[in-house]
Amino acid sequence: MVVETDATSRASMSAAQALRRHALSHGKVQMMPKCAIRGLSDFADWYTPGVAAPCLAIRSDPSLVDRYTNRSNTVAIVSDGTRVLGLGDIGPEAAMPVMEGKALLFKYLGGVDAIPICLRTKDPAELVRTVKLLEPSFGGINLEDIAQPKCFRILESLRAELTIPLWHDDQQGTATVVLAALINALRVVKKELGRVKVALIGMGAANVATYRLLKAEGMDPAGVIACDSRGTLHTQRSDIEQDRDAHAEKWHVCCETNVERVHGGIAEALRGADVCVAFSRCGPGTIQPEWIRTMNRDAIVFACANPTPEISPHLAREAGARVVGTGGSNYPNQVNNALAFPAIFRGALDVQARTISDDMALAAAHEIARCAAERGIREDYIVPRLDEWDVYPRVAVATAFKAQQQGLARLTSSWEDLYAKAQTTMNEARTATQLLLREKLIPVDS
Image (cartoon, rainbow, N blue to C red):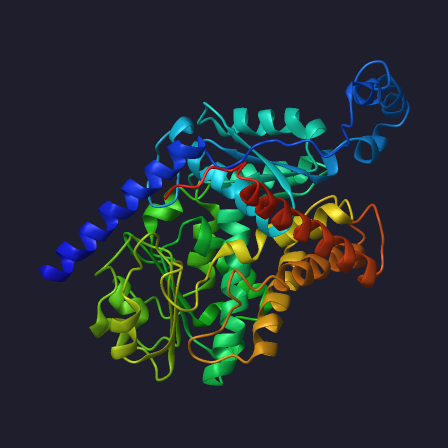
């Protein structure tokens, strides 16, 4: 009871501090000039009458918009607020702090200018139409915190219709970092992806995408048991089959996995598994230690619910898990999609990619894993920390290069030039923030 009271007290203090700091700065992002303003005469070029020249040039050749404007470095963060991290359907206004936070990470980690756009609609068709209308103003679109199953249809529809990179971070970003973490975790325990048994706990957007990406990497679907809130997935799940048009991805998992038709819940899914990837209900207690004990030796457990993992890392380790990761920064092995999306968009934007393919995500995952491996992986270090700045330009270049190899890039460049551009852009973003702090142009509370 004392531990629970202390945890509640810390959470209350943290919430109060977050509210105070958000109110102090009125949010987290702003727009700043990027052109020289030495005096009033400069506005003759930046605005009227000089601005007519780039306007007319773009009218003659619309592709010049990326040369004469900031469009090629601008991403829209689009959400309807129906599945906000750990909070659920809280609406578009309440989703804004999260989208601003995403924009902050885009800029600070990737040098990408991102604009939060929260829409007052829950209609997938209306959301798709709105994003298509926004395309002329943005170099890329990041979908965020949209409930499933509509998030799958929205992503699928827009990827087919847009000519700019589109990314659903809750799906693709999460899956990318899970793969990176799993590559190195398997190295630590000396197991192979194609031969392990995997339990996927929670079958929302994150784990559905994780399943797809791990399968593309070589995971055997026959060795997978997935579990949602109603139990394990298999071909006898009539509730999913009857609604398989809406839940096509989950039904696909039912048909490909769990060849022994294991029934039950999380406990049954974990029995005999080598790997647990959980994006389920917040813990503690969603996953019990005794269930971890039934996993195979040298088990890997990723308990990624936010803000509280399904099982605390120390309990998972005590129960026999050798490598444990969570979604939180307060534990080692943070499986955080912030390692992926700022750099992946940086790479996609720098070559003006037409889309972000699964192969580009795979390339990014391998580069993230490689960055950690070069530093020396161990049980408590399987992915880089967010403050290991050299990771981001490397992931950007890996993404850009894969886009070039796949014929998805409008621009081509060498590895050296891409790296120099990405590194410079990212460093400038962090340096600018520190400059604003030094000059006291950003408020700091005591």
